[in-house]
Length: 155
Image (cartoon, rainbow, N blue to C red; front, side, top):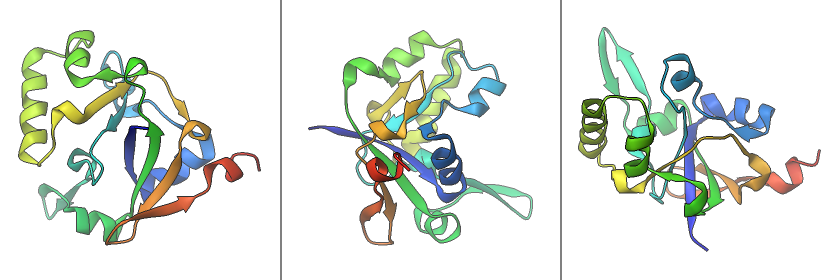
């Protein structure tokens, strides 16, 4: 079975577990992105665009994967990849109301970070975590199982 991942940090993990679902982007909803999406990636290592930005003495910069691991933790939800239920980045560009030059900038930024837009997929609906195969944590060397979602979802 092919899989796809939703990467996140410890800062968002508690909200996901409290609501019991991966949620469509609140930021996109608030900022008029239509349609707002929940972003997933086929990248099995780490989706670099999921790395947080920080303000270091007035300079905004992106954390490294290692820094984000140390400060916030790295987590991912693993789902079965059903291409027919998701929207590829290429299709999303045509489905969204965002100007085309914004997409070029987003793609270029992602590529500069080492990401591949061909790995990006969007869901336009929340995904219950019981539909996930697992929730994993990066231990600094590899991804390991963090939460048994099937067991935890019945409590």
